[in-house]
Each structure stands twice: as C-alpha cells, then as structure tokens.
Image (cartoon, rainbow, N blue to C red):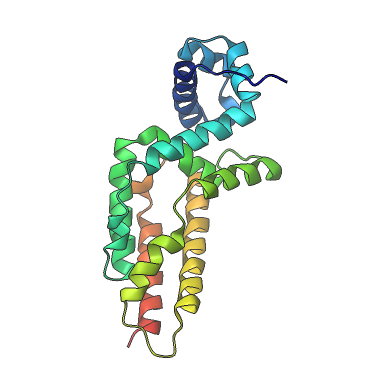
Length: 209
C-alpha cells in the first residue's frame, strides 16, 4: 500500500481548524465537514489524511500539546523553594497561559478530565497521548524536593510517591469541577487551589525538621 503524501499546509490548516472546533464544541458536537470547510479542504482530504474523527481528535490533541508545551517555562516549577510555593506559582502561571492560549488549554483540560465522556477504550487512547506528550510530574517535583530540608528518616522516593498521591487527589477534584462547570476556567478553581496548598502544607510539616 502506497504511503499517503500529505500537504504540510493542508495538515496545518486542518489541525488548526479542528483545534478550534474540538476546543469550543467538544468531541461529540464537532462535525468533520465544518472542520474541512474552515480548513478550505474537502471532507475526503480530512479522512484521507486522518482516517476518522477519533484519530483526528488524537492528532489534534498532540498538536495542542506540542503548541502548549513549547510555550511553557518550566523554571516556574523548578525554581520554587518548596512544594507549597510551587503549587501557587504554577497555578498563577497556568492562569496566565490559559488566557494567552485558550483553545489549547480548553482542549487539554477537557481531554485530561474526560469531559467529553469518551468510552473507556477511547479515553485510554486519549490519556496515553496526553502522558506521552506531557512533562512528567516527577521531573518537575524532584528538583524542588531535593532542596527541601527533609528528616533523616524520610526517603526521597517515599516522599515523591506521597506527593504524586496528592497530585492524583487534586486531579480528581479538577475532573469533577470540569464536569460540573463546563464553561468554567482555572480562575474559578480557587477552592481546589486552596485544597492543593493545604495538602502540600500538611505534607511539608509532616516531613521537615
């Protein structure tokens, strides 16, 4: 079977249009023919390049992650003196990024929280794309953790697992928020942000001298 030769300009237009539609209308309400029209290509070209709507969504998610990750300054996380400061700095920074890149942020947040109510099988594919194209939390947390004044009986790996547990809790609270407030944004998540800081404060008091 001959490999499909894709026009880079058409690919860029299709992904740009699909990002706009998936971010604003979510997966179920997005129509491929509308994406094709906005990208100034035929519907057949969209399917020829991306096979089906599901695969187009996955490729659009990769596209959004590449765009978004390319703009992130990870020093905001890495330069924090402790975990509480990292949470506050990172959240403030994310609000600024959200305001600057609203389409990418909305798509990524919806995908991460499964706000589209995907099937379990498709959600697993979405989360795999998200994980493979995102900065690992451990890479951001470990430098900060190593700078903290830990007790002698506290192992870095154990502390890291505990922090990841806190992150999972925050993630679950965020997912619930997105489902209950489909038009909300990070600025509305003050209660979750406060919870995150409280969790980290308790964590730090429990392991520091």
